Image (cartoon, rainbow, N blue to C red; front, side):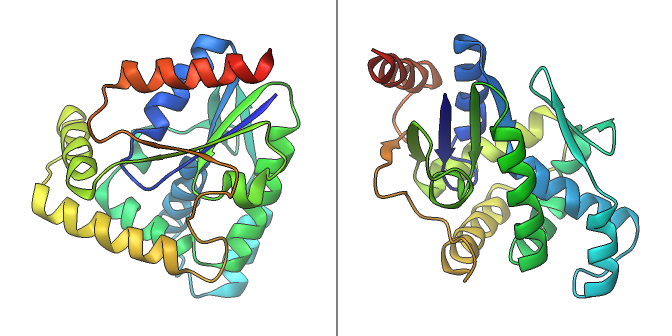
Length: 216
């Protein structure tokens, strides 16, 4: 079974997707982490994203794998190094690049073919696996999403400013929704869930019911 979960940054889709995968015993795939990982790798190699030849060579030497829902790049587990505000900004720019999107879409489709998968991101139901058995679009107000991201960064010990996070989220929404390649939008057959005034447990219970209804 393939389940697609899309939504804007900070909507809670990653948290609920992980919990849903654990509840159902499915493999969890965070595609946003794949874009962040590519952005992080570009920074580590001091490669300008506009340098097409260097970018293409880096992608040719990049491989993703997943084991027990743990995402790895080039055989190395991906950790909190990709969760900094700097990498967030860079990944938004990297996600606009056609070569990167084509490469990661192919990687994501390859992973999606392996058993029961819950895949979350921004174009899963519309582009990556449009044949998914269930599609959810998780959203929340920009203010609530900024609050959640602020709290997340503080828990990680990363210095954060709420107003800056809010402005960056609004800009990222604009970038993600207006890009020419795979813009952020709900699939026509997606179930839209606004989590602004919901607890994570309420969202999880709703998704579990929808999945079980689909399976019966």
